Structures are given as C-alpha cells and as structure tokens.
Length: 403
Ligand code: HMG
Image (cartoon, rainbow, N blue to C red; front, top):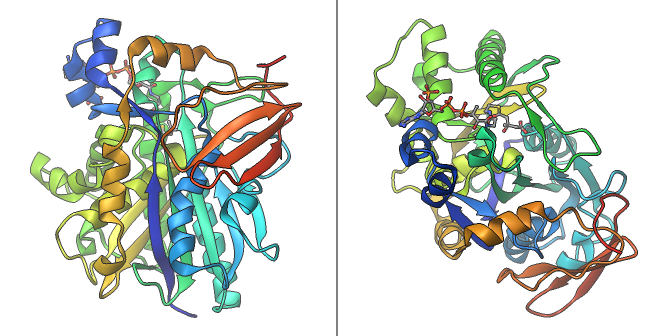
C-alpha cells in the first residue's frame, strides 16, 4: 500500500467576524460563559456575497496554484450548507479554478463528519492509482436560530486538503476506528435554513461516540493513547475538545489533570476559538492550528477525532513527515483570520435574517475575498473571481428569497 496522506492544506474563512463580547452584551449573558465556558472569543460571519462555494474556492485556489491540476482526478466537496438539492457545490468551482474536465466532482454530506469520509475515500482512490491526487474541500457556514443558546456556537470556514501518495505534510495512519448510531441530536430538514438542535444530547452523543470510535480503533490495532503527541477533536466550541479528551482518558482508566488536557489540545484550538464552528472543516482547522505552531512534530502521531451529529465518528491518526513545516501555509492561514472585518451587531442580525437567495437577487458587494457570489438570476447563481472577474454560473433550486 502506498504511503498516503495530506500533501497540502489551506484554510479560508469569511469577510466578517463578530466577537463574543458584543454578542454577550446584546444577550445579557456574562461574557465569561462564552470565553471560559464555551472557549469562544469570536465567530466568522459570511458576508452577503459569500457562501460555501466562495469559501471553498478561496481555500482551494492556492493549493491548485502550487500543485497544478495534472494529477487531479477527483474533487470532493464536503458540506452540510449545500446550495442545491441535486447538483454538487463543487461544480461551480470548475470555471473559478480552471479544473480539468477530467475531474470527478461530487458533494458529500454527513454533518461535521463528511470531510473525514472524503479523506478516507481519497485514500482508497489513491491506493488504487498512486499517480492520482484527490482534492478534498470542507466548507461550511454554521448558523443557528437567533437568541438561542446555540447562537454563540456559530462560525464558518473552509479547508482544502490535497490528498496524495508520498505526502509532503502528514501521512495518514492505516488504522481507523468508526462508530455510527441513529441519534436526533442535530439535524436540518430540507425546509429549514437553521438546524434543530438538542444541545445537551449532542454533547453526550459526541462523548459516547469518542469512546466507541477509539475502542474500535484499538481493536483494529491502533496506537495506545500514550503514543500520541497531540489530539485534534472536532470543535463545535473549543471547550468541547477539552471535554472530549477528559472523557477519553477517563474511559481509558487514566483520569487526567487539567494541565494534561491543556497540553494535549490547547494548540489545536487557536483558529477555532476565533472562527467558531465551521462544521466539517472544524477538525481540519484544528489540525492546521496544531501544525502551524512552532514545535516540530515530525514523526509524532497526532490523533484525530471526527464527529458529525446524527451521528458518525471516526478516530484516526496523521503523522507529520520530515520537512513538513516548509509546506505549511502558516502566514496565509493567520492572515485569513486576521483580515476579517468586525461586523456591527445590527448588520449581523440583518444578514442572519435574510433568507436564502432565490429567483432574482443581487447581493451587496461586501467581501474582500478573491471570489464572490455576484448575483442570482432565475435561480442561477453567478460567481466571480474578484481579481480577474472571470464568471461562473450555477443553478440553484431551493430557498425563498428573491422576486
Ligand atoms: P447552554 O446550555 O446555554 O450552556 O448552551 P451551558 O449552560 O451548558 O453553559 C456552557 C458552559 O459554560 C458550561 O460549562 C457552564 O458551566 C459554563 P460546562 O459545565 O459544560 O463545562 N458557564 C460559565 N463559565 C464561566 N462563567 C460563567 C458561565 N456560565 C456558564 N458565567 C450548548 C451550550 C453547547 C448546549 C449550546 O451552545 C448549543 O446547543 N450549541 C450547539 C450544539 C453543539 O455545539 N453541540 C456540541 C456537540 S455536537 C457537535 O459537535 C456537532 C455539531 O458540530 C453539528 C454537526 O455535526 O454538524 C454541532
């Protein structure tokens, strides 16, 4: 079997950011509940002319600029913020990113877990033909109803991951542990723009899934917990990573001290703490945050725990390869976070209350990002690259906004 894994990873997030101090003030909630209780300081908010396609294009463009598309045979866009019930959200990336017509394009959904399934499917394709590369893009915008406890756990972001044989960044371990069950902790019926969530159940479902997925991983010959240098968890809010790690260690019969948990997860929370929940991208933002910190992790197995409500979880590992630091995008990742513009609370609420576009709609020109949603006409979305004004069109068949 060829060595297979992450050859490149690039992040993107939105134009706007809302800080939790503002949210707490408006809600009359002590800000410490958010800063300490949830471990969140701010959350990314999509501008009127941003969606999962523009975020995906922004994350993927630098990867394709660096590696070209010659070996690219498959693009999997993982999202639960789809813009169409039928057509894959990866297809409008074709003209935006000059994808070869010989690329297989598909969209994948299972709440926050889908990008991990995409990664595993990519490994399968590359094992069959190591000359091929697969671009996995995780792109999501997490929105909950206003004035609910979940509102503080919104966010948005994308991670583009080029999967390849002989990876330059990290090799994926051959063993994975999986757990799935039918749980109604979080779901979004087709007619809703926001999910229905049972917050408390979602936390216990996540913790159960962590334990079961790791047990499966161990049964299949995976590493002992003590062998990992760090633990990346799906982070709907960053304290969840602390809860998950405590639960895992306790269930393995090794009750931890607080500083043990901090040492294992703190470096993975840097981006998610200020971006918020980016659903299926969140785990990979955690991995990027860990890799972007100064310690050299070459040869150190990193545990990854993917959780998607509903629910599916997977426990697997990635090990940074020699020289990986030269291939990281640390400055660009940090710039994406730092470049966001603070949004006023009133504008945030207006954007939130604006229904999904349909019919005819011209979004406000807001984003400073390289791609934007320019218009919706007859349910056809038109995207443009803001640098060179190249235009792509895309049909959408659902929603309630427009003429
Ligand atoms: P809540 O019920 O309002 O919060 O909403 P709480 O009362 O449980 O407080 C939260 C924490 O803040 C608690 O800490 C409090 O003690 C603490 P804990 O006891 O849990 O350690 N706290 C304070 N700390 C300091 N100073 C204070 C203070 N006050 C309270 N003054 C909840 C929290 C997460 C339920 C809500 O935000 C929610 O429903 N969020 C959405 C669901 C979610 O994120 N679930 C996570 C697991 S499911 C998952 O990860 C999948 C998901 O990403 C979806 C997908 O897969 O697609 C969501």
